[in-house]
Image 1: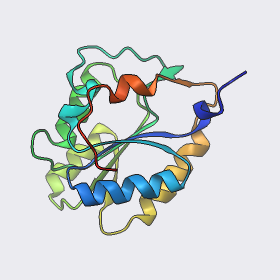
Image 2: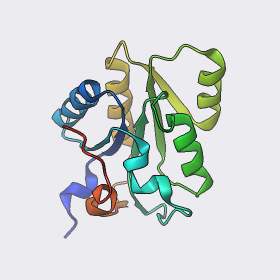
Image 3: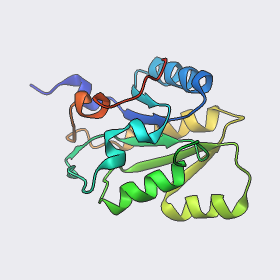
Amino acid sequence: MKDPEQKRLRILLFEDNNMLRSMLHDLLQEQRWEVIGYPDPEGCPLRHATKCTCTHARVCADVIVTDLEMPNVDGFTFVNDLLKTGCKVPFLAMFTACDDPVRLAEARALGFTLFNKSDLRPLLEWLHNVETQLDTRRQLTSRGELIRRRLPDFS
């Protein structure tokens, strides 16, 4: 029998602001989604991978939601590095207050859907739409693989 948890949207959330990350974490979990929050990409095992071990049928997450500007590595660099490993996370969202048109254009070119931190509704609507596009046959890697080296997220 299939695990019902496999059908839930799994979101990797990267936000260095503890209060905002905690608020987003709670809000997304209220939607019955699985959320793994990181204050910094450096705490995520995916950051240090040299090759993606996922397949299109078995992925580590459905969505990455990241801040653009974080102290150790920005969201753009983090995801760009992931994509170079062959990362197969199908949906990318950037949640940012950045208004630099060059940086935002780079993010769009990389495949990000952009959301401004001043309004959560478009992000939630987008995630609900993503959920309808999930391949319900896909499997998720174990949660333990994603949290084993995680920094505290205070959520």
